[in-house]
Length: 256
Image (cartoon, rainbow, N blue to C red; front, top):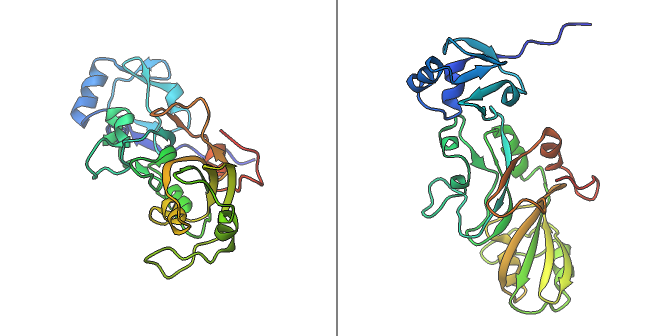
């Protein structure tokens, strides 16, 4: 049996700077004060190369607190209303719900797609470019489920219209992919999409003469928004949960 491969080695000061703990100079100061502990011992050399393992948050502390997880990092966050999903848009950003130093992480964190200012629910944030592109790629067909509250009662034909795959939104010439509608009550429905066009849910209901008054995403792939994850709270995803994002919920047990 061949020996297990060695974990990649990185300079401690570069690792911590990339995680947003400060400049190289500030990292060296933390080390001099004995505030960086690895495997139970204070680190004496900020330039030392250390093995980057998956359990770094268990092996290292900074000022007595477990070190932040290194890249790749995937988070789920329960996006509240009134926050934007962009670093550049005006207004309060979803990134302000995370530790402030995370805005200095390298590679930077980005949302996996976006939810509108007034839309709530499951949002993924990551520094893993490959994962991000796999989820948002049109080729992935990762299903996303939304709970919609409507201004007018459903008339009963919406499910058939959305499922046919021939609905063309105003201003477009390419029909939408088939979508699944589940009626919950006369004013509320679940809508599952496999694409993500601009304001798609709102425009779909506008196309059938209705208006969305509230929109909430509760599932991506086979990953559900956990009922105990309150608005504004976030949680790190495990590898199993990351894989579930690209699976059909009907084929795989729901994971949260």
